[in-house]
Length: 466
Image 1 (spheres, rainbow, N blue to C red):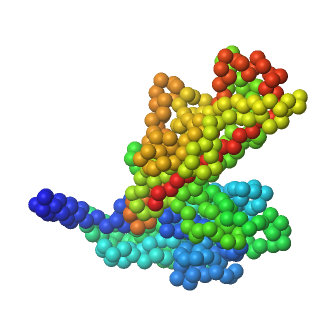
Image 2: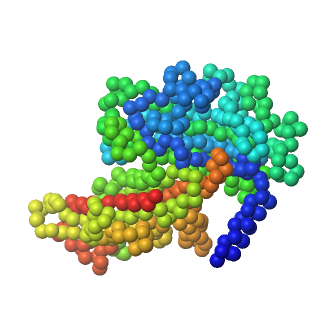
Image 3: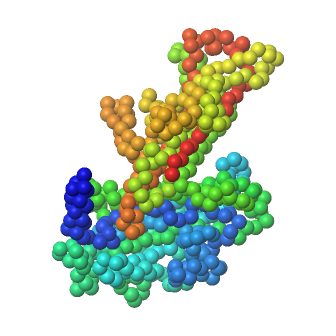
């Protein structure tokens, strides 16, 4: 066994030596928030920063803006960008513009997002470089001044920026650089040009000072949630193949806010459930009064979103989501059944209507290909024993599209982040359906007996093993 271990180590060393390309020169496009703030104190004020404020200043004032990417109270929630990218990329950041409480949607806090442009100047092989403020606005065709405010979503909840084409200045062997061709430098501001390895944008959250009007719709809650969606698109019409897969994409960042006390200061996984309006007034008879004596109704949409830390996280095994009738995920519930609690006729005879809950991958709710089915009795035992009941988050799922073929559903996203390290994140979108089978049409043929108002509680559980 010792000899095998020694051989493996030698091979790994030799491979690493033969391929000595600095990570800075690995072409990549990224969206990353693994080390940024994922929870925000909504009592704070974060000002819109200028182009000229530097990262070292750790600014937090009205004149320069708030530029804090680390530590408690930071407003840096992510960064996006490119490195050694041979094509120009357009990033578009769009937001809901509002933190909304999940338990009380009438409570909220408005926000907007700012993009602080940065460029990395090559300094030495292979130690990396020095970051500078980047004042060239290719999207609007201008060069900003240091006092100008950076691009932001204030007013329309969307903003776009464009990165430059990055000429390679590697030498022919790929293990060093050739700085003789000055045309391969990139413009930084009105007069400065540098050999650059990456252009990126710190994504910063901005909060206006709280007013008396804001206080009307704020409460001491820790479940305020906001979504920030990032898409990127290649500007080169000839881009194709594997390169196009790198140069085009999207990711959603989710940030939790709290007003008052927070039960924790960092979140890695988010489960968001949005009920449909019809969920509180389902027409049961309308669902089953047909030749099949069955029907289904969409009652909610759901999202499971993770951060994108620097790792090879297997999110399908780390994050487990299931649905039951029990408020306690460790204890079994009873089978799902709509139970009558009011009858117009005044009858006290108990009536119940069994149902199942099915979760479909978004876009497939009108097919027979559901992700998981729940009868209400599932409960958590252990990862090995409970995985079969949990939603399937396997990357690149093949789903029968009912058209004689299969579609690929991408759930897992893999990036190389700013420093070139691997980063893995997950965004799952699902549609939740309630489905009723009226065996032999008994309920439909006994409408008077079953008339009334019915209810049942449905609980969504998430188990995260970090």
